[in-house]
Structure formats: C-alpha cells, structure tokens
Amino acid sequence: MDSRDRRLGLDRAISRRDFLNGVGVAIGASLLPACGKRGDPIADVPTSYYPPAETGMRGSHPGSFEVAHATVRGQHWSAEKTDEHYDLVVVGAGLSGLSAAYVYRRDVDPNARILVLDNHDDFGGHAKRNEFTLDGRTFIGYGGTMFMEAPKTYPATAKQVVRELGIDTDRHGDFYHEGLFASHGVGRVSFFDKETFGADYLASGEHGFGESIGDAPLSASAKAELARLFADEEDYLAGMTPAERRAVLEAHSWRDYLEKFAGVGEEGLAFVQKWPHGVWAIGADALPAWMAWNEGYPGFAGMDLDYGDENGSEVDDGGFYFPDGNASIARLLVRALVPAAAPGDSMEDIVTARFDYSELDQPENLTRIRLSSTVVDLRHQGGEFDADVDVTYVSGDKGRTVTANKVVWAGYHSMLPHVCPDVPGDQVAALNSSVRAPLVYTNVLIRNWRSLVELGLRRAYCPGSFFQTVMLTHPVSMDDYRFSQSPDEPVILHLQYIPLAPGLPAPQQFRVGRQALLETSFETFERNVRDQLGRMLGPGGFVPARDIAGITVNRWAHGYAYSVDAESGDVAWWPEWWRHERRPWVDARQRVGNIAFAGIDAASNAMTEAAIEEAHRAVHSLTTEAAGEAT
Ligand SMILES: Cc1cc2nc3c(=O)[nH]c(=O)nc-3n(C[C@H](O)[C@H](O)[C@H](O)COP(=O)(O)OP(=O)(O)OC[C@H]3O[C@@H](n4cnc5c(N)ncnc54)[C@H](O)[C@@H]3O)c2cc1C
View 1 (cartoon, helix red, strand yellow):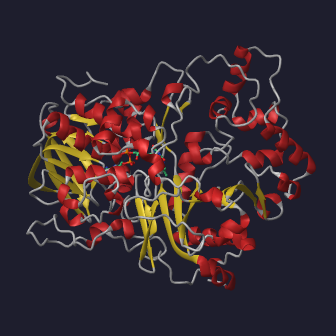
View 2 (view 1 turned 135 degrees about the vertical axis):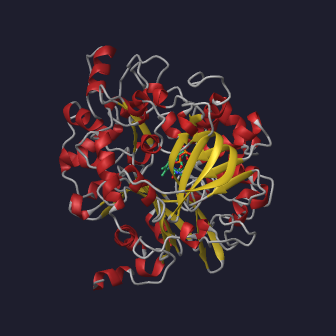
View 3 (view 1 turned 180 degrees about the vertical axis):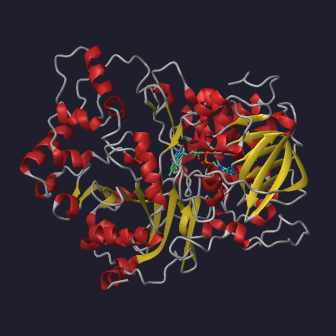
C-alpha cells in the first residue's frame, strides 16, 4: 500500500473486510458446524448466521463457485448415499427455483416434501440483499435485481405469484419518494475522466449536454457532433425506404451506424460506447443498431421502420421498487415456503423482517432450503427416465446423494451437460447455446450525500471510468425502514461495472469479461471506488478516506441470460424480437424424464417475470404424461 492508497483510505477500517482480499475466509459451508443442535448433521446453522449483513466480495462470493468450476473441468466427487428422499428437488434458490417450489406446492401437492439446493451462502440468486450498519442504523441496498420493471406487463403466471405474495405494485407511490431528489436539485450528469478525455470534468444536464458541456474536455467538432446526435432531429438515412432502413440497422452495430451514417467521430464514439451497459451489459460496438433504435437511443430521428407491433409496444408502468430490489420477492417466497424463517405477513414487513436462517433446513420442514450446496451430479436411477433421480451435491468438501421423484433444474443451462449424463446429445448443443453476461453491482455506504447535492448529482454516466454508472440508490421507505431524507444522513451509492472486451462478438466479450472479473481482487474494486468517487465528488467536498463507511462488491460472473444461434451467431437479446424460426432456448428446456428446466436461460430473458414464468412452465411440464409435451 503506497501513500496514494493511504490518502484514498485503503487502510481505513470500514465494513468490507469479511474476505481478505476477496478470497479465503468464506462464510457458508465453512461456518456450518458438523452436527447441529437438533441432532441433524446438516440442519444446524447458528441463529447468528445472517448473510445479507456480510460485506466485502458478495454475489458470486468466494466459496460459492469453485466446486461448480471444478465439476465443469471434469472433477468427479465421491458422495455418501443418504436416506433423504423428496417429492421434488429444486436446483437453484434464485427467484426461479424458489418460484418452482412455491408453484409445485400450490398446484401439484400442498404436502409435497421439497428440497431446494443452492451453491451460495444466501438464497435469492441475483435477487440479493445487501445490508450495512453504521452507528446502530441499518441501510438496505440491492446487490443484484433492482426492481420490477413494468409489472403490469408481466405474464399472468408471474402476476399471480406476485399477487399471492401480497405485492401490490399499484402502491409504488406510497413508498417511493418521487420528489425527494428533485427537491435537493440533484439530477443526471456525465463524468469525463482524464485518462480517456484528457481531464476530469463533471458535466451537468440531462445527458451532460447542458451548457456546461461547453467546458468539457472534448474537441469543438466532437461537442458539435454530440450536441447534434442528442438533439436527435436529423434523419441520417433520409431517402431510404423502410425496408432499406431496416437492412442498414440490422447490418450494423450502434457504434458502426453512428460512425458511418451519423458522422460521429472517435471522441463521440468513446462517449456513447458504454451507454447500453446498464441495460444490456454490452457496449455500443456489439449492440445491434436496431436494438438501439428500439431502446430510444439517439440517432434514429425519422425512422419509420415498418416493424408493425413487434417493437416498442411495451407498456411503461413505472416499475415497483423495494429497498433491497427483488430480494424482497425472494424473501416473500421463502417466508411462504418456510414460515418459521421470518415473522410477518405483508409486503411491507418483509423489508424489516430479520430472517432466521437456522430454520431454513430443518428436518420437519415440508420445504427445506439448503445453502452452500453445489449440485454436481443428476441422473435417473438405472438410466430409466421414469425412475427416481439421484441428486448429488457438494457442501464444504463433502458429497451427499439424495433422491427425488422429480427435479427442477433452475441453475445455469450450460452447466447441465457436465452434471447430467441423461441429457440427449442434440439438447446438449441447445443448452450450450446459453451465454451469460457478467455484471458487477457495487454498493458503497457514504456518511452523507452533501457533496452530491453540491454538484447536482443523482446519477452519473461515466463513459471512460471503471464504473460506468454512479448513482444514489432508489429512495424507497417501507415499514419502519426510512430512506435518508436529508443529505446530512448516510446513504448507499450504487456503482456499476460491466467487464467486456470491446471489438469481439458479444458472446466472446462475455467470456473474456467473466475471466477478467474472477481475477479482479476486492482490493482493486476498492481502489477504483475510492479513486473514482474522490475524483468525481471531491470538488463537492467528498473525501474518500473520511466519507466511505462500507463497500460491498456484488460480482455476478453469470448475469444476464442470452441464447446464441449456433448457425448465424445471432444473440437473442430479447426473445420477442427474435427473427429466426429456431429458438435454441426452447430446444434446451425440454423436459428429460423426471427432470424439468426452469431459470432465465430457459427463456433467453433475464427478467424477473421470465424467472417466475419459467418456474411455472417447468413445474407443469412435470405433470404431463410424457417428456417434451409442455414446452
Ligand atoms: C446485476 C443484475 C441486475 C438485475 N436487475 C434486474 C431488474 O432490475 N429487474 C429484473 O426483472 N431482472 C433483473 N435481473 C435479472 C435477474 O437475473 C432475474 O430477475 C432473476 O433473479 C433470475 O432468477 P433465476 O432464478 O433464473 O437465476 P439466478 O438468480 O441466477 O438463480 C439461480 C441460482 O442457481 C444457483 N445454481 C446454479 N447452478 C447450481 C448448481 N449446480 N447447484 C446449486 N445451485 C446452482 C445459482 O448460483 C443461483 O443462485 C438482474 C440480474 C442481474 C445479474
């Protein structure tokens, strides 16, 4: 640690050092004692075990993925055969796996004995809750899934689950402090960094193109190009028919389109490169131009593309936010499945409910949720597709085999061929068509947000910096939980980082980015947090060494789910916009004997509603006579 690190505060004691340098001291399996208070060798978790309060490296935390990676590389595990038998075993305690358990109990058998297995030390998958405590007060943030976007457009199956859990999305206005940020004069800004643009500069205005862009470190021509682009009045394909326009948009990335047709130069292109990161986890170089048009990104004035109703038809109903994002949905599902795990009965009190994790895996539960357990083998007994299924998982360094009448796999598709020898060859290819984009959501607790008010910053787009987005978390109060109303109070900042390798096709970018992500230490994240916040907010009075009170890095190596067509190489960014007849994710999700497939890979759609809908489809596919009937 050099003097610069010390100035940034890397030596300060804050809430982040549960993991030394991001490795080693993993909670979860390693904390679980060998024998429990109730005499069950696996059921005992101390009541103090409360993973949402862990800080440091979370998401795919150390200890969660090593067994899976070794399995994919070919490692075999010896396992003790237990006498545990379940009606249903669910692999994955994300929103899809938890929904599968819920729907099975609701629609198939209310008395079913169910085991849910997950490799993480917490349930929820991407829907992850982060908590910080400072001076006796708890601050809640979203470590992944941020909100329910457009819940009115959810498919009926997902709407029903949401409603049954007691979530009333019409009450958004009761909890979301609409006018809070405006009353403090904070809004959208852009931050130009000196490594990319030659000088550090914060430009205010909706897209950083207010009057202050006049002083931004850009050439006069780049300023003029960007001003023209974001004014979005020019038709760059004037004179072309709708069919010709479509052909142009379908043949170019957004970046190439802007370069060739809108005359945007290198500086302007550097500015827009990370524009789509937060929504699609890909940059302008690999985002198809027609998607950019669909998203309402600039550069497409006058486009009449004759796409019919296919595009732009989604109703924007504003979304619904819990303070911990959709982790509250996961918590509501868990409370429904294991009532003893949490008190309360409303969507409000789930926010403040202190979960008792020691209740999740008790032998007397109808549903048991077993964390820190990676499924490494899945096969029908005797190779007979109507027989029970042996499910082997590894927890700590111990393998155990349980049996089940039925299994729902709500984990990653691409892992399944390494785990389940029963999957037919052509389905293996379809399962392998699923790719995952890596993402990192970092939460930083700061002691006050006076510097943001001073600078007018609610959300910053940072095209050249490590974190492309820095923003105040959504201002939501529910039950007794109050969002900081005054800039003098602590608040959580949300920072996004999408590791990619621009220039390569998207699936390769995801692979390269994921590898780089797993090699990035917590210390590197912390240094970047401190350096970037110091440079952006310093002019407003922010001092990283003094003002940062906690850091949690949520590393999602396997984030958004997309299917890739093997023949064309096309990525199914959004299934409703898919133009090929082949739908690899549908081929991939066909039931194999007593094993059905849920999860977002099964939809090529990472959204919460898809996770729930796929759970419903998978459960109901298990109730049909023959495999493959309900797709
Ligand atoms: C950073 C981020 C932000 C997001 N924001 C939003 C948002 O705002 N709104 C929205 O609607 N959607 C959002 N999403 C999409 C989100 O993926 C879905 O909402 C949903 O949570 C996915 O649920 P899932 O259960 O299918 O997958 P996951 O959440 O990935 O859960 C699958 C679980 O299975 C586990 N697993 C996999 N293999 C095994 C195995 N072999 N053994 C045991 N366990 C295994 C995984 O580790 C994981 O815990 C976001 C996603 C990310 C990554």
